[in-house]
Image (cartoon, rainbow, N blue to C red; front, side, top):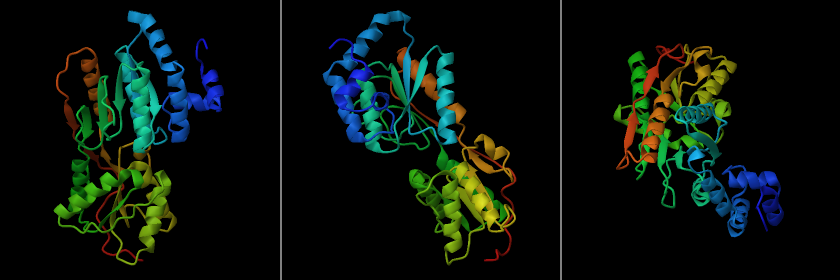
Length: 333
């Protein structure tokens, strides 16, 4: 057949070249059945062996190549972290390429398995807390907001400590009724919120999570709160800053003020949180520190300077701005 191109694979699979490119590059924007079909055709026709041969022919002239596996880059935080990793790797004379895995476990494992099968990644940095189904045979570092138990290098943030600091800040201001707004992909944050509320002797029952994402999640969370029959919370903690942005806008739409009627806290400290009206109080995860630690661990592994897997936990801080204050004695419903 000669050299196998994306075009030839597309002909064999009966799909477009763009779909083949997405499947081979780990893009989550195609169906799992289509991805498996394309990968099977590529493997049976020697595509991955061809890639290995081409890479080996470059020998010492080929810079190390690292795959950065991230669920998506629509959210500001993932986009910021992925871009930061590419720059940090480049400063270490290493090529970094972003692969989108989606949030589903099967999609994530397909992305990892494809990278291992192709054998042209010298290492992987992953943003998933899921343990890969197959044993990872290249240097592997996981960046995660939760201290999950993985047999690989792990850099995590103490998000539970960050939520605890946020709740302490609110209770110090006098808040006792504190709610939470999150979405499907932030259930672990919700669980941590409930746990910290209970240990603080507070009622964790004001949960307004929903299936939307970003600002829409904040909008719907406020609508869910306003539709509830019980006493409103005086403060809200949101799973990330975009949700907080949507929540604040929806509160304003209904005539409420922040922080006059409701205090609001976000997470991640993305750039726009500093220029919001009001400026957003937010939990800072220190993504820059996490990414730098991940690159250092990976470089140590590539150069054979590391033994057993390490777990580095980065502490969270709370940046206090104008979206939190003392609670009003009563909120007019």
